[in-house]
Length: 183
Image (cartoon, rainbow, N blue to C red; front, top):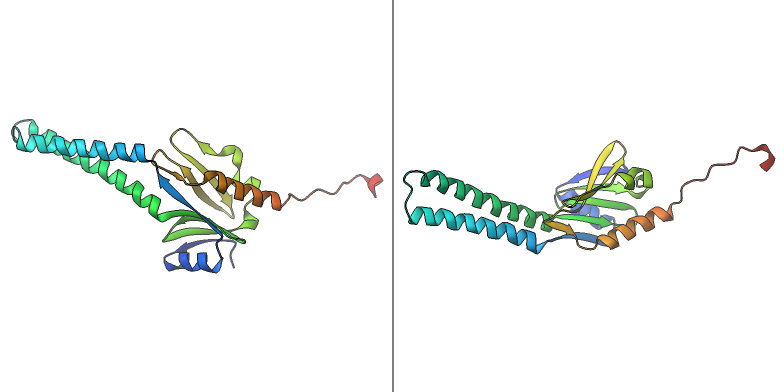
């Protein structure tokens, strides 16, 4: 069996059940920012409605109407995207595997591939707008999203504790001394 495998479709749920997942970390919406997306989208729709029913669509109002309509749809679809992201994406931990992805496409990674070097904590991608870990193992780059302004891992401390605990369980091998006096 491969140590890292990209699962798709029903294979994701089957692998989660076979691996006896002991903890699943879900994402949660950030209500103020998603609410702001919805509010701005509704305001643009109201503006389009005022232009349509107010002065009509003559002159420059036609362009403003279509721009407002487009902007309203854009902001509401962004809110919908993050709502679906929250519902479908997950990070799961079992005794043998680490899972990351969404319900229909997820990575199953053997814990032996996850080390301090492959997780590379020093190059963690963090900003005010996004946080993610990148796992570089077996020739694959697997992104582990932690937060955006719109969603975040519900129990990020618990996730990091589980990963770090697992890394501490597998100590790095010690090098044998090559000093001939030690023999």
